[in-house]
Length: 413
Picture 1 (cartoon, rainbow, N blue to C red):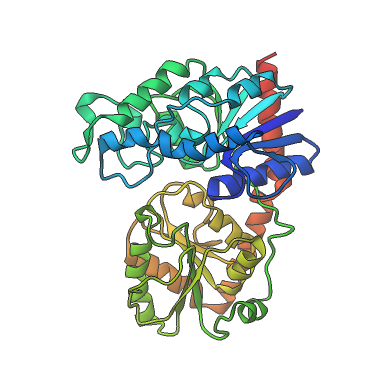
Picture 2 (cartoon, helix red, strand yellow; picture 1 turned 90 degrees about the vertical axis):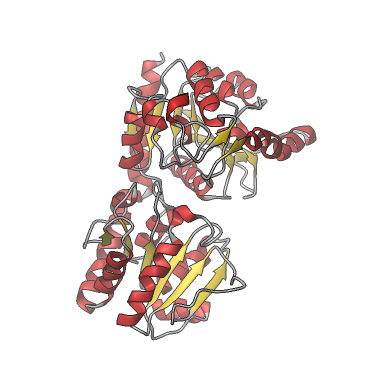
């Protein structure tokens, strides 16, 4: 079986890292897996980027040109919009290849157009990493046009100008006439697919993103803190996101509100933020904040998770964040809100604590609960590592992907 994974990048961004890990999990199991990307950064010979200089230039300018229609839309939705209008050369290469299965990932407008996706003649499996595939041009949204359909009478009050989302959604309806096999990493995203006006009735399978738990192992906490120059004898909380606290979807503001209560109960607590350098005006929590900036390699991240006592994921919306899986694999309990895909990571009071959605007081309660009893804390750490081994390990994820690939191939014979 020969499989090609398509993703805009190989290792830059959460979706890229997830796709790259699935690709290598399959290769380790004997599947002839390859990855095709517009932006190759890993230096991996199994990853192929644009071949010619012209193709590389076109790949570089696609995001900028493709985003131009977004200027016609005025909206309060901060998530980047992708109308996916520009055609690419990838479809011709895919259809002329000898691959058995095409596994799409985060392709949106930066790699394939909407028409491109519908023109693929090979059997297609699409692993979703956000909501874009069944929405308009939004990657995430708190509105429900994706359930109802994008019509002129259900447009959000905060949008004006050209209805980019409706136009994008209508193009998806036009070009995607044949249902594709959908894979979602979380049960929440699968329910969204099933309830969507666009993909209702399409086959959908839940398969968590893969993690090499043989590499992602706990490191001695004292040693990890020494290497990272972190304090040795205080409780450390960890928060991480691309851009740190800049994306409101990641809930950094909710975390800060919760921590003001936590530090009153436990003044010794300190916070680590990765993905962001120190801002000009850091928030005053009454406790130190350690900013690590971007962590570009897995070893540094492994040390960071191992150095922390609790990983906090205060997201308002999230699918199956890599930070949660990586923390569990390093034996670090996770505290998060009970929303979207986070219950797929946190088993309440087993591998961490699920707080009531968007209630900072309960998030603070959960952090305190994890830390207040040393015997319970050790049990949570063991449960966290066990869950990572059972649910996210390469062999478990590969087995599910093989089943999906084989079923789709049989259906296309």
